Image (cartoon, rainbow, N blue to C red; front, side, top):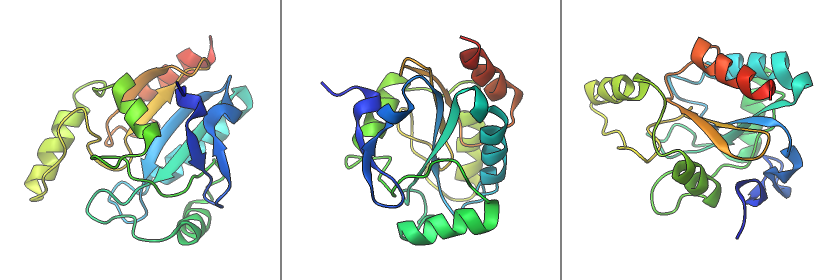
Length: 182
């Protein structure tokens, strides 16, 4: 049986790898998109990465086009967008499917490990999406772009945060700092 960190993935440059190269680090796995109202979170994700990377923290971005076609480009275009607009230096991976029957095994494992998000942010965000005439996914599926999974140094999923939870949200930062202190 493959562990979460051994799940095969591809970098945004097309290299085959797994998350095992980050074993021993605290990870924040985020499904990202370039044309989403939440896209400015890239800036705060990069700031979080820069603040904590020397303590063994990584943000890992996984582009996905699962929500309203908000990540239509190819990997090279996505990489260029992230670098040009947000100076993203955290690891980015090849575009994948994160919801539905064709979801990538990494996201199937993340969702199975943490089927619910922390706090009430997901319900409020779901209501907001409905107000825009959209049909959001119900739990345990991902709600939207920029949902965040926190993975402990031992590879266990210890937190799941709604898309609307900003990367500098005190609850998320506290959870990251608690894992880094272990």
